Amino acid sequence: MDMELSLEKLLFNLNTLAELGEEITSPKDFTRVVKSSLYMVMGSFSASRGIIFQYDQDDKVLFPIASKGLGDVKGVTLKLGSNTIKEIIKYNKPLDLKGAEPLVGLLGPSRAELEKFGAKALAFLVVKEELLGMIAINEKFSGEDFSVYDLQLLSVMAQHIAFSLHSHTLLMRLMHKYTENKGLYENLRRIYYDTIHAFAAAIDAKDAYTKGHSHRVSAYCSVVAREMGWSSEDIEGIRISGLLHDIGKIAVDKTIINKASPLTSNECRELNSHPVIGYEILSRIKFPWKGIPMMTRNHHEKVDGSGYPDRLKKSDIPVGARVMALVDAFDAMTTDRPYRPRLSFKEAIDEVKDNFNKQFDPEVVHPFISVIRKEVMGEAENPSIIPLMHEHLDPVTINRLFEGFPRLI
Image (cartoon, rainbow, N blue to C red; front, side):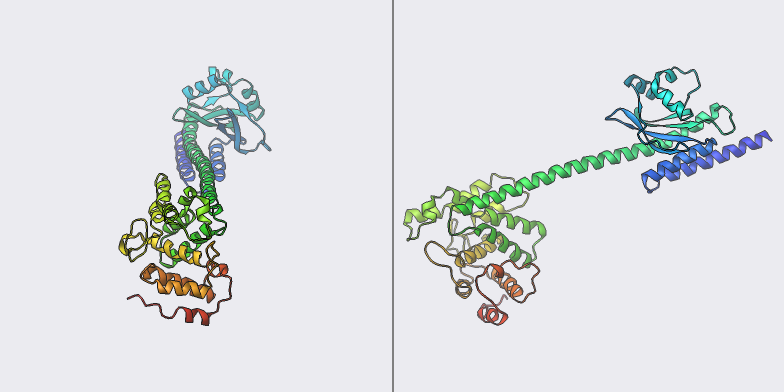
């Protein structure tokens, strides 16, 4: 009969261990997993009260994360000395609070706190010589002492829970580190973009007539690149390049930039040096986007080879520089300059038409026209070009203006 009871108890305990293993590896909410684990431990020993503590490595205290039969345990903490923790890790097996083990005495004031809960047996949650927490349960409902077998079973169950807590702790540490790093990244990103915008403002400040030019070129580049099917990363790259394309003008005399009369050959030479100066500045910076220095250097090249500084022809000019060459010229034409008032939209489009496949690449002109047409037709989600024009444009006028552009073959 006793053998049958022992066998039945063994089977029950094995089944409980299997259920516990399944529970702690489930994707359920961690709080639910801990509570379920505590209830299984208590059920295995017919205990009416129990509590699981987690160890806080920073504050060096144990605090409750699940309890049953103890009422409100919020605010309860157990303080353990570093020497006691070392002994717990070394001991690493369940402890009978009524026993004579030296470790019981090392618990100090924490022992009295545990006895208030009626704690009888403790199981420490240790993984890789790191204390993660502790389980405390009161005496068995039957009043029997915990046997050696009981303590062995409690040890196995504690190991299961310790591994679950270890995984959760690692995850929380990773999440904390991720959140921390994400915050640092966002701060750096904000500083990075603020610096770029500050540069753009400094560039535009050199020219009293072109306030906002860099931001407009940046916006125009973005919408044309999007129309051409560029990736999000490449669109962001040309957007940043648009903000910085005239950075070389910082080294050009302000009187030359703002001169209303024709420039001398020396003044022309100094003004036309700004793409190379910009390239030299930007090529020293490790941008997360490719091609920014070259787009800056080549944004005054022309597809027929008559541009500067390198007199490149169409296929040799980076496509981003070809996009920028068009929108930069378009913005220059449609804003007031020291040497002339702004051109009307029609006059600017006529200039683009006259320089089609000479100064401007047809493969860029057509997407540019497409963007404008969509904005006028109300088909663009965020119009970027038409809102900056100083005249009313309707579909009939736009279609008439765009007649005469050769189609791409």
